Image (cartoon, rainbow, N blue to C red; front, side, top):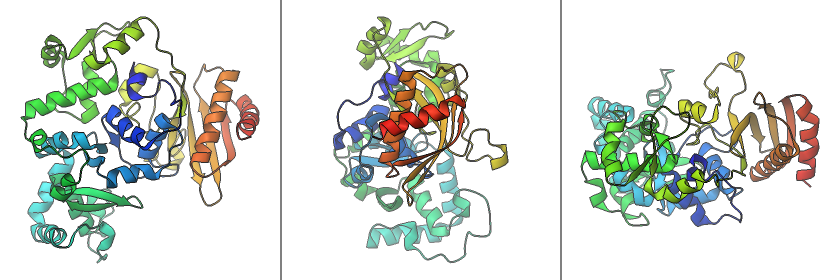
Length: 407
């Protein structure tokens, strides 16, 4: 049910359309943004996992056309234009969010510069951080995050966190900021101001329902993380939603707590009860995929222990810099560390590890080969280069299968 709710149960059986991209974001409720691009950047990879080899520019186009918007949600995320009103209202009430706290403190300490920057954008139009000359400020510290950026970059991010600026579009993945009122006016569908003015309790209730819908089936303990809600969600808080019929309660074998299903998934629940949900999809997942980002949920659902090691010193890494979980027919069967050498047209499989107990049969081998060949072509790096593979017996068979898949 979780795979079905996330669009990962079965592959798309046709070529993707532009509308599928927005529909996929709306289905997940949000798409987390990250800048690492040793392979495709995370938002593009999350979409690829569900849509297959779609044209990467479609994401930037959807943002520029106002069909998606950027906001703080789980982290910095893309959301559907129809949802931005609630996020905008929620942000105004989220004084506990670290980005909001940083922004408030920065404005208190650097009000003159921040106010001048905002006035400039109001007067002359959208701006990027790259539009401001680097003057040496903010370079003395090695701390990560906003405080190591030049002042204008920090100020743009602070106004974004405070809701005064939004992202109008991206150019080479760089944010182009404009006044929120101008970005909101260009959304498709149009922005509904009423959605941003409901009570904090109603906004929270909406995010709880969205989380349960996106998760397919979940105990209360996993709900808060999806939108980083505080305080955590408990069974008592969900009782009114059960009484109203907006949520359904189910018992899951092996779970000590009740599980919840959104009423929109009632038919899906019935299919699951009858054993009629069949996982057939094989793909690679981003470390920031909604299926993966809650590591406790990931281990409980898939018995898959996972750590993103790009922040770990190289000698201490176990699997690699930017390791992608491998989803195969409803199981996480392994992990892949890869790098796309775009200038050379080479997709390097630096290491590939199958999980203990995973048997290499023809179905897995062919599916893995087709997936690697497809993701390499999608990157514009059709030549595959293999490094470390475990089990070792997989190496030769995989190379042969990939050669066949590549034609």
